[in-house]
Length: 245
Image (cartoon, rainbow, N blue to C red; front, side, top):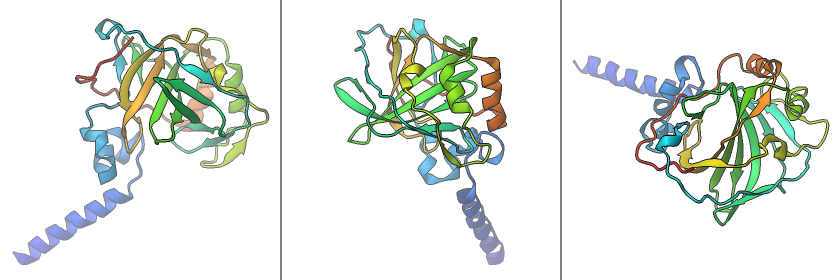
């Protein structure tokens, strides 16, 4: 009996060690349904109550006087990296937004296909997340959707430097400005959410633009080719949190 108990205990320890070695993914063993079980640090992916992405349903939102986002984005040199989870553009210091009396510095932006958030039940073929952080470490993310249409010039500048080799960081040929990733009308939906990847930390301010941009089918297919699979977390429950419009 003791032998069996010892075997069972070693099996549990072995499984826990195995889980700790599993890398989070969008498919297979480390898929989004398993994220919260992979490591203790990822627990919020499973038990969090304010998780992102969500379906933004306008007739369920609260009307509010939302402040305009003050953009202070600058032309800058940037680098692009295929990190295996997304195509990420790391942005140098100097660009920021001001919203709700706080200033957040742009750190990076990256892409998901299909879109992670939805608007009135509609999924878009591509979404960009512009990730900002303030001096206290608080995060603010601006989400912008892409519909299929005309090619996007900034995406062309980025795509041509993307490496198929994971984690190879490459400098872009020319300076870019993330203002080109924003629609002309900058009205947005506002909610409190989380990171959409492990550790799924909550307390993230989310601002999702109402109007989409366009990207060509070729640009979207290029991105899917690098990822080799969808890289979007499934929708999460809104629960009791307010979504403002």
